[in-house]
Length: 162
Image (cartoon, rainbow, N blue to C red):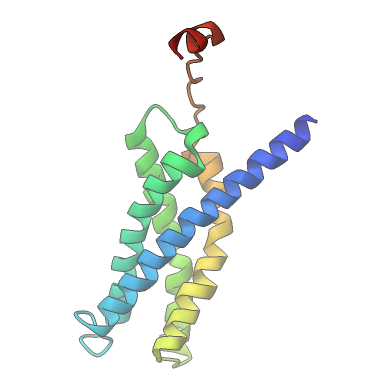
């Protein structure tokens, strides 16, 4: 029975992590494409597409930290949000290497420079490969606390207040 409860809790946590990740993906992909089409267009300067990806991913990291701290890993939050945020950003920035590498190989090495190719390499392949590592590192290194038990109200007090 204990294993079933733990498995369900892990599945709920994975679902929340996935939902938060989807919001972050929308921020990342949306901002990446907005920047790529405007102020950081690929022909603006050498490496512009990589700069656009760094900016969009950094914004998504901030959104994901809040979602994961207050929802996905709420039960494992630490009492030191500063340390937690720093750890989250370190893991996330390190994991940013995966989609950047995929984008670099696709765009610069293989010569696939279309909007579709840039998005598939960085926002599909790269983000999918990094998701598993991030989840594991967040669980093992970032969100390592246990939430304080929620105060319970005795049934008599609830009945009296009704």
